[in-house]
Image (cartoon, rainbow, N blue to C red; front, side, top):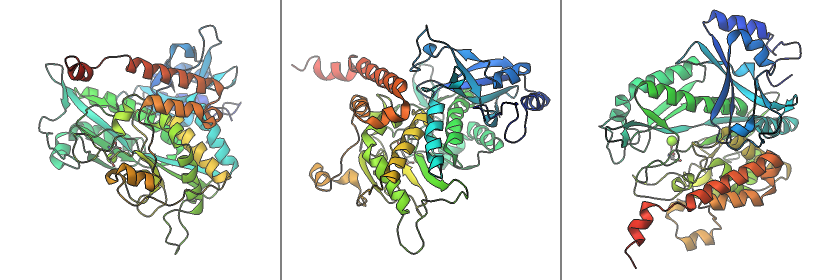
Length: 461
Ligand code: GLU
Ligand code: MG
């Protein structure tokens, strides 16, 4: 089976040929097909073809140079990579039904390109499959929807969205129901199974939650979701933002990863604790947690990948209550201060440090690889943290052995560079590209002089 989901004869696992797919899409009124791939940030890029060219596109006709993208390690002198679409991901754009989007894996010389984000997740997914495991993932999408005022300033879409504690506010939700309705209906028409949506804790902040699925499907959906949320809100004159912390005085946007491992054959959730033991999660789940905790500082660079991410990962700013974002490398029960939470009945592990700017393929790949290492080595995560870690003094945290996640992108990227797991998972070329891109991002930020600095220091001395 090729990356397009088609066999050499051009027939998909479900028996659909490329020509059948073309005819079916033509009957639905589709004129254009997009071979979509992502850059280092997980942002969609694409080559577009008229529909009659779909069979060629599925066979890998769409060539381009990775050198044109952020963080794709190719030189302008290198051979081009091919975007080979996965037919099973075909999604007719809900806001533009004459165009179909397909997540693609990059290929070089007929083989998956080592540094392709989607190929990286596929590789770790295969490792899990060799262990008889399937990685299921549900991602909670938090984001801001903003309106630009006449003076250029950005504020919530609704002028009434001003509460100090706006979380779950019904009036704030109802005021935004036009675009939310369009977005939620589109998600459900695509079969994503939205099960709830709400106004989140920042003015102008929302969350739309949909069903979990195989991690590759979820990563494709999160990638597509950001595009769709931006396009649908734009039609309403609004701006959707997935920046982790757009406002200093409001909570940030997480993308909590809800993870579990299932038996590849039966689909049984292997994180469910055995009956009557009173545990929150199975022994396998504990090992998975231990693997992630072992590599947490390096993982942080990938799941919280921007300068701005570290302004979200704080205990408390001048916002309503807490940030709700974890700062500590620990796990526990339904306790939001832990990096890893085991919510409710305990059949999944939620990573709360992940933010809405992550590349979901790379984030899922690294979390899974760390968890699998924990299983292979039979690691023990130690005692859970049951207390509100935000409230502990630094001395008390030290006494309990609670360490913190990196405090800046600079720290996080050095932790990534120092941990061999990053290279193992990303491959040499992508690990180098990620490290040099992120070091440069940090250096560029650090060399800018902010208004905070001039206000504080200009006339102080
Ligand atoms: N917005 C919070 C974050 O940055 C999370 C709030 C919640 O628990 O839903 O992670
Ligand atoms: Mg939330």
